[in-house]
Image (cartoon, rainbow, N blue to C red; front, side):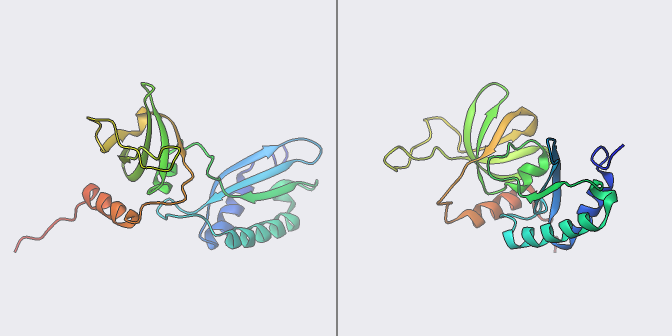
Length: 195
């Protein structure tokens, strides 16, 4: 069995390096061909918002490359192209941790009954999403309104989501931090002490 057949040693080594840089290993992809390509997909921990700093990713990549060059048990003795990258905005959200990392982001969702939603993910409470529907803008840039009778805020079980992707957004709402704080407070109210 080659090092590419069992990635346990690589996964463990990469996790140690990435931890030191505040990153997590999301996935490992192998592509065959003349020179095999190993792609490490890294991200911030699920409790952090935002995007991984590209300088940090580059530094972790340099360290991982040096480690792979020095230790044949990681990827074998034959040449291998190692790439360290982030998931990118086109990634389909599939695991609960993907949704937790996407708090505050605008999502395009499809539910099991075929309903398409465009909503901002405010919180993830266990296996349930707290969302605020946002209809978007028309082709002239004017804000659209939700259809009459549509609930702005909704809760949706993850099990009902069949497809979810982050939408690219250039002008997030100015009150985004407050929206997230309010959703967190609603999902995890602090116990008040009685006097």
